[in-house]
Length: 226
Image 1 (cartoon, helix red, strand yellow):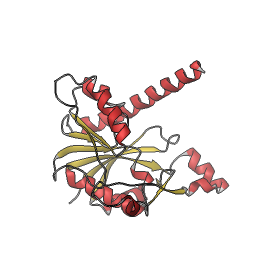
Image 2: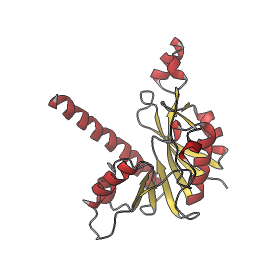
Image 3: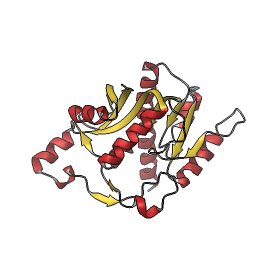
């Protein structure tokens, strides 16, 4: 059991390292090291690497428990005496002024939302950034997706389950339970991706696949067009 857990930890570290390398490539491409925000930040696994490389980053998550864990993790490595900039927030109602960030990063989350809510989040993310977004989408261009199409697998159509999507604006929780969020990520090809982000006034600048053809993870650099 210990060997298995050790293997899982190693795999997780390798995965986070690969994802961070992509994020760093993007930040180098757009030439920024400050006013970067990552939502959701999860449990703060990226913070040590960001801080070690002198990136000035904010973090946020809708899950209050993860925010607490992230805060503790950030506080242990935050050396300037200031409070770690970790907050509870939601992509649909971000606590930032217009055009206040150099880059907003979001991984894992967008593909789980229904189309209307996803578009609302993209518009809100566009509002708070000066120019750049880095967003994870799920690609159809994988070997796994190809074979699922051959078998007409039901997993092609992501299953829907109720999920609470808070936006912290004082509305009752029952209001948000009307939304449905898929358990799997909504998969897109390049044309569908361009059309979707275009509705939010964004354009695709570059796609960074984690493992081409093997992984469905696309990290997409988006630029504001309006």
